[in-house]
Image (cartoon, rainbow, N blue to C red; front, side):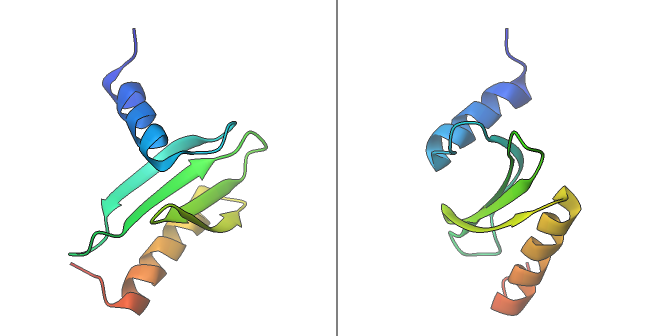
Amino acid sequence: MLTFKESFNEVIEAKLKVPKGEKVVKDYGKIGKTKATAVITQRTDGKFNLYIDGLKMDTFKKQKEAETMVTQFRQSMGLDD
């Protein structure tokens, strides 16, 4: 039986259409008051991809780097809550 987090991640992965071999590590949901969404996925080789509104933005070696990029994106677009 799947845990809540595992089942929730499956829903996010299906909605985002995450490529095979990747799994959702962190889902930011909506960014600010807009409908933009941000999701960080982990690849099988241990690298992390950042998707914003379903578009792959970049690949990072560490999850923390991807999280920092989301914060910078929010600030540059003026989307802080």
